[in-house]
Image 1 (cartoon, rainbow, N blue to C red):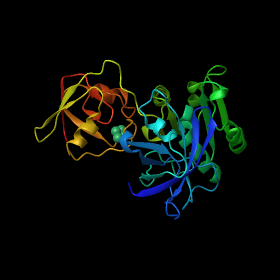
Image 2 (image 1 turned 180 degrees about the vertical axis):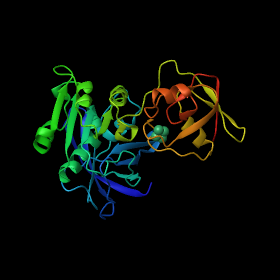
Image 3 (image 1 turned 90 degrees about the vertical axis):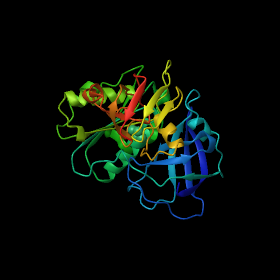
Image 4 (image 1 turned 120 degrees about the vertical axis):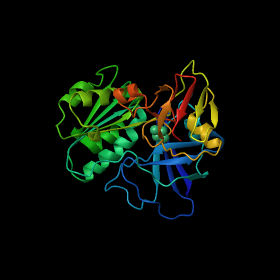
Length: 315
Ligand code: FES
């Protein structure tokens, strides 16, 4: 954690969604960031949670005076959003500098932006950036109903005909048509729930898009599954760890002082990927393709578990 931020404003924007505004606690300007970047917040006993920076203004953020994030309070979530919503203006938090595992392409190719629910936050920053570049893009935003559509008026004002709103109870998003009608050279971005990301990736691959043109980020930490059971992980120095049903391989190994790399802890960035020497992974990420999952020779250790009693990992 290298930044110290002060919460200066918390505004309810819709139902359970609040917009948080932070400034540097010492009054300095903040590090610049690019669209799609996130910041890790140290929430004390709750742990660290990552939230995408949201940028509505033109031009793209550069040495900004504030960071903004939008957080939807999930009563049955993992506690991160509840901890954020419990914060009041004036509180000081330690955070990381902005990091970006979900960056926008730099070339002139058009972009198809697809957001589900509160996954709209990095997608708004993409749309802002693309608007400032006068680049071609479509912005598709799906929510359960119009009443769940966060920032509706602002988005309609800023992104006009590039924006299409989809409401599950009236006109459910048609991912097949959107992707089938997209230009061949388009970059496709999706941030939303796991099912939406998996559908976008599958349809895009079926339509011939190269992996390098399909980009995605989960907006929430994946919940554990009912029936998860403990399993063992053996690493290269011979140590064996038991991974309990309510904890991840990353958390257990880190607590034991094992040097591991990770970032998102949601299963979408791929940074924690390890080779599997033996055992059968239970993949919970959105990084791997169906064929990579079936091969079973790599695993994202932040979210995935084991179908076998023990995994031997190249760590
Ligand atoms: S830390 Fe991002 S996929 Fe595991």
